[in-house]
Image (tube, rainbow, N blue to C red; front, side, top):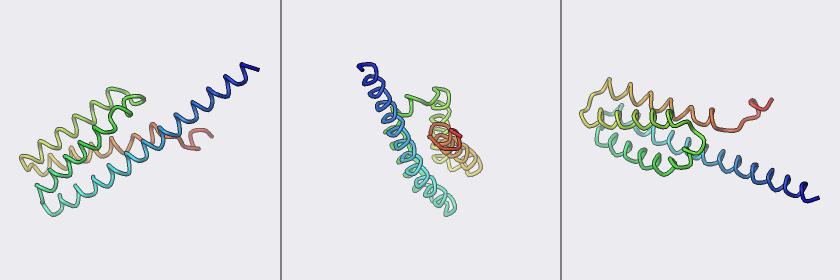
Length: 126
């Protein structure tokens, strides 16, 4: 009987972890997507101060979720995301349009890939 209770407790803990992880990843994706859209809107207007401000917000949001992301995401991918964000911020400082938009697009694609890679979907189960 003790084994059954232990197995149920382990299943509940695993299910809770998966649920919390999925929620945090989806929330990160929504927040980052909204900020990325603001950056792209500022880019269209050539508002470099707005771009820099929104990139700083992106950096803060990423730093807030970095520890949780490190639990399941490969270190190499996290480093690539952070390098891409830093390069985007540097390109925004020097107002290099083609370099900025290229690096920022790469950054956004890497972040949008996280929920597909780390999230839970029925397509993967079936």
